[in-house]
Length: 199
Image (cartoon, rainbow, N blue to C red):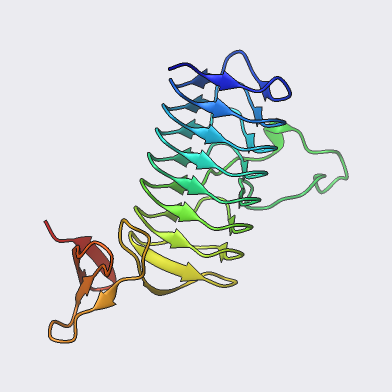
């Protein structure tokens, strides 16, 4: 296995690409970005300087991942999703001068293992999307998302739970607080707004 880079993409020579990673047309991977093994970066996607990406991550077409984002293993970033990095975005400072790198502090988004962000969703600077969570298409995430949470809307709010298969979990009628995946049968326990996998 080797790295596959389309000629029309731009990959900085200081970026690290894991074995089996594919970079498609017009994608841009900036300096010091690190991508793990078996990743796919779609057409027109952007990965900012120093972004850290785990193994087997998929960035769909035109996804924008701004530094200093961190993506865990198995993360899915849908088409045209955006991970922002500026709490107070302005082109100029209060005196009207164009802002430069040293004029603001970047705050990265963290997307934990197995989580998925739907098409055109936005994660605001500094939020954390928990393990195996699912952010619906078009949602705007402005606060942290718990592990296994299913969030929708603007601003995003939790409407349920999902398991590792991405399917909405069903609460057992005879066991309140016990949630089951209809696809895999995996069980999860809910307590105080937190869901944990049963081992």
